[in-house]
Image (cartoon, rainbow, N blue to C red; front, top):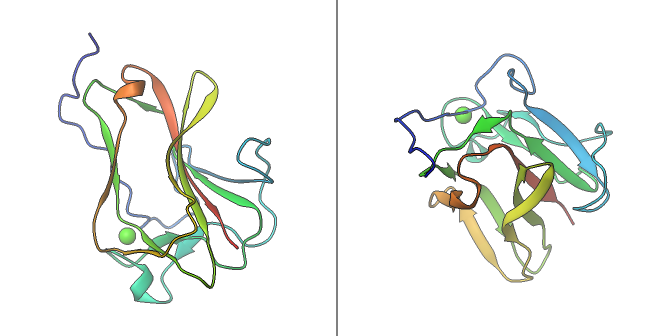
Length: 154
Ligand SMILES: [Ca+2]
């Protein structure tokens, strides 16, 4: 049995004074979801506070602008997962007939990235901070993982 989380939540609101956040956060790019990760060139994930409709709480958010090319990865530090851990986040994501941006959440465990959430259907979808997204991580209980938020813009 993997022990349950003793009650410790790791929270990131992107309010820091450096980008990416300290402690092992990384920003990478790739030409597909399975190609090697490379250091970013051009626009990609960044700390953002220019238009508050894209900030859920506080003064800042993490945003990947529509000018970003290829697959843009925002990767967390390593985290020890317990038996009952889950990932929760707020997102401002829109997909409609004018563009089908793709969004993924991946978990790296034992050296392999696993897709645990994907918004890839060419359907109209809005979640403009309307409701929290929660991802069950039971599959990775007991492992040390990294999580990645990946955006592929049109
Ligand atoms: Ca924030």
